[in-house]
Amino acid sequence: MTLHYGIETTEPRSGGLLEQSHKIRVVVVGSIEPRKGQDVLVRSIEGMARELVDSFEFYFVGRVLDIEYHDALKRKTEALTNVHWVGEVSRNESLKYISNSNVVVCTSRDETGPIAVIEGMSLGKAIVSTPVGVVPEIIEHGQNGLLIEIDSDRTLTECLVQLCQDRPLLEKLGNAARTSFGEHLTIERYARDVANVVSRVIDAYRAEPN
View 1: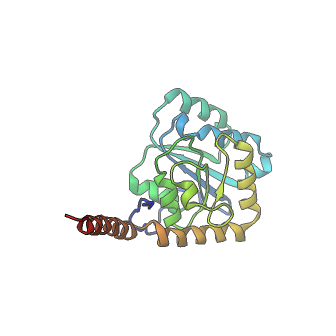
View 2 (view 1 turned 90 degrees about the vertical axis):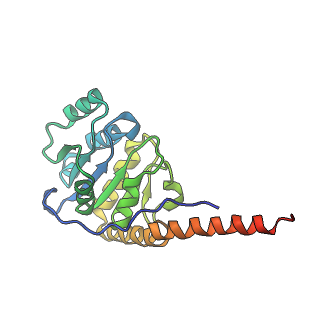
View 3 (view 1 turned 60 degrees about the horizontal axis):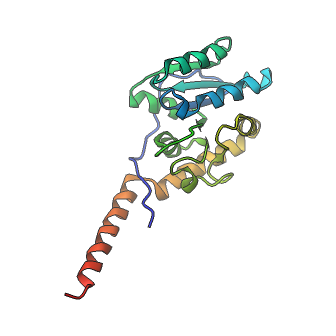
């Protein structure tokens, strides 16, 4: 039996942290380091036609663990006023960024979670993620999110452009993600599953012959 990690249901958070506009707001939450793959999104941005890039606001949120990596990526995007390197913030502020976004992107090469994806699902955001950690078990491509290959800026670009040009799909994926969270990823569901496993173990132990 697989026990999916659960988190408390996240309520939408208001706040003026993101630019308010008609643009698609894309948020990446995670420590800035090669393992998290922010370079994949930067390459995706670099490969987009300028008119497409201008359809988005990009936010990189997280503590810098690799300064050289961070600085190199920031230099590549410094001419773009719609790319924002936010840095480390509190969990509450991190949730505000997710809550006020349209798309949560995970470009990680390796993960145990990722918690940001689950938080994005709880807030009804469209998820675009690599198949790391629990993602292949909780995201079904095209149904409640979009999956991309690890290190593939090309497929990431395709997904972002698709969501930009198909707003009903953007809304559909976000709503489906929220539904999936409610059915499988709440802390209450996790507690029930753990209790059921413990109960089964106890029952099996009691059923063994003395």
